[in-house]
Length: 168
Length: 168
Length: 168
Image (cartoon, rainbow over all chains, first blue to last red; front, side, top):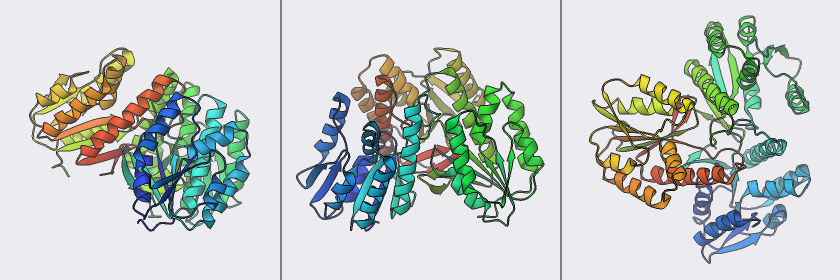
């Protein structure tokens, strides 16, 4: 399974997505690239970023790409972890960027990489309809993006309580 | 697998439920019946209905059944797609209809059809408790309805990022 | 499968978690212990508790443990159903208790029991980010707790529309 060129790891909040994705990448020879899409707007986010960083050692090279994810993928060689598509989508939507062209650029970048690439994303649609329009738009776009990446991925994993379920 | 008499396709928002359900039905000889439970209350809903319609061709015969789903099933022969139980439940609850008798009528209609029937529904319970009583009641009733149909279905499929996981 | 010492049953609201957990326990010789973490604060909760109780017969011995779950597990012999971790976590957080020591005490109690023990819990992270800090904190802690118990469990089951999917 570790020979997959493109892997998508989906799951809920605190389902062990990042940890599992790191274990998939670190099965390959170091060094590894960590493409971080997070922006530390507030203390909650700073704390999460800190926890994730504390798990990674000197074999990881971190690249910040809150928006320029396609470009970061194109510029990287060797095993890559992208964490995560949900924050990338958040940054795109809050910044008023065109999602159609961003999704297309990401897809083209993924089709060009030699891999292995492991991408982390959230599944956000398994609740009642959100009571605000932005929430509804976000879960629609996240669902569309997840479907699109899952379609071109060699391997798709759904995380449940820290455990991987193989979907594809 | 395509010989199942009754199939339930569950998933989150934008998980590819409708598309997968259409592919299951169109594996059977045309013509196919599409029982639509949607009511176009607003622009968001009109847009969704339009997207779904654009995917279907002249081999599909559309029947609108926002409330009279059991009757529509009883009146139909050949392959049927019901899209979806979540909007049917919404219409029932907003209209103040008796859910117990509606669920019983649906179950009886499903037990009488020769099939194949594919029903689409949402899983809405995988979040924290909704902050309003209607939201809590809705997710309880949706869960009850899903369990009931899954129990009598020959096949149950959980969609993740456009990909089917076979549950039953 | 019924020989598992520790089983975790996860799922959404009204996904059939309690019913499935009861069926797993009642495959063992009676009597069975039901450790209830629910507190009847309001009518909605009283109704839920009543529904669950109505399913259980005289072979069940009920122990109320809204907070003292580790102690209740340590004091029990024979097959045990814990229903559920989500209400236990709610009680801990609303009461301002230290989660770190509570989680550790639970883990130690579970490692000491001879079993079989079946624990019910909710997966609550598969939606967009909750709009309030307590909601976000709750889903983080629930996710952490679920991962921790899943890690030491012999068997983990994800419920979808009343049907079990084996995760581990």
